Length: 96
Image (cartoon, rainbow, N blue to C red):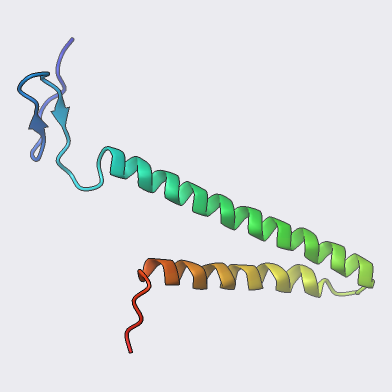
């Protein structure tokens, strides 16, 4: 079995001969971020889908000619999720 060619920033383990990528975000950190963002995108898709479904049900129940709830509820959910994402991304630091 041939070794992959070394690249700048790669470190080779002398005992096992395996090559570790020295770039940022590799290995477990990359998987952790992938899982984090996959979960976030699933949450966004599910939230928008449920709000759209509720908006359609509300429009039918109220017998509205224009689907106002079908338009407004998903937009409100997206704004709410963006605010939550910004708060989480800032690390809870409130600078005044």
